[in-house]
Length: 406
Image 1: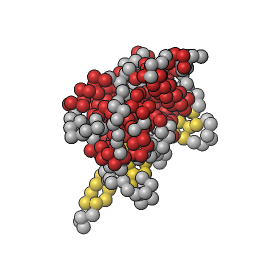
Image 2 (image 1 turned 60 degrees about the vertical axis):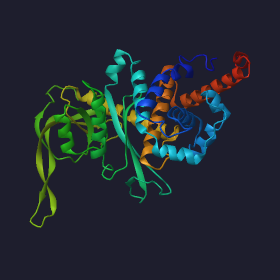
Image 3 (image 1 turned 135 degrees about the vertical axis):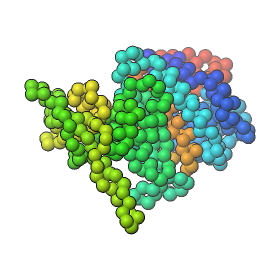
Image 4 (image 1 turned 45 degrees about the horizontal axis):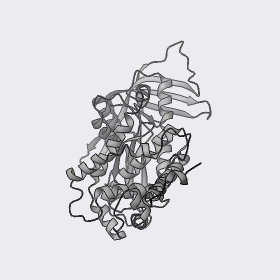
């Protein structure tokens, strides 16, 4: 059965990357199925995956309807007599072990990333890192960051390799509203998983802390971030030669130099009040300033600890950071990440891992079949539906090829 004849891969290929043996093994090692009668880890995995694909507005009520739908039970070979209520799903999300879903997410990512060619692996060493905030509209979020509107919010920080999300974190504790705290934790979390990496981590203007950048130097983590245009520094050495071509294509090179940055040194005065005095940081950084040819007078300042790439390569690396903005938009618009299905951190973590698993399936489908985000999501969902129909036809003793004959 092939719905789209010109596609290189279909849903059957992709579902084969979800290891049944691992799902069963993790159920034992994480003890996810202890003290539960119906909503075992495997069933929750398939329910959430199916629910994210099939519902434009996912909720605990729609998950209840999905679980009790005969089509869902046929698709994943479940007992047709089992029923659940919304309250059971809510309780399960609040208590279920999120590490079960994290390990599945990381395993599926590893399997997909092994399909990258050697050239792609080199290309995908550029890791885009960014965060997105999601607020709960009725103020019932149990734990979250206080935002300017007075409502609580959740911060998702994700690392993206250009095709797939390679790391993720959920932040709800006070302090993580600052990207100077959230982004370094997300980056170091990915670094720990990728021993011997040669990655370059690229970020927008959220990260500005000189102390954090100095930590990256000490930890041998290569980064590129966009700096504020009024950043104070001392120039140590210029890298622009007398006969150097300043034309970078879409921009013009204005400055390329080694610098020291100022940072704030905390000092307690006689009254015990803390204030900050500006001092030069010990670390040495590279500052690249380019001026856009498209936007007259628009300058971009880039700070990095990379002294090997050309100014053009640094500017291009920052341009490719836009991929993660597109990815976040895909998560929110197509996979409903902007809506919180659970209101505690445990359930929020589970939903993020499951959303990223579904995203990886759709993104690999998109990449292999050379189609757009929206088209990939729509066609992937259509293949899920048609797979269910075929299984129902077989279950009833028929031949699905007759139904799908073109």
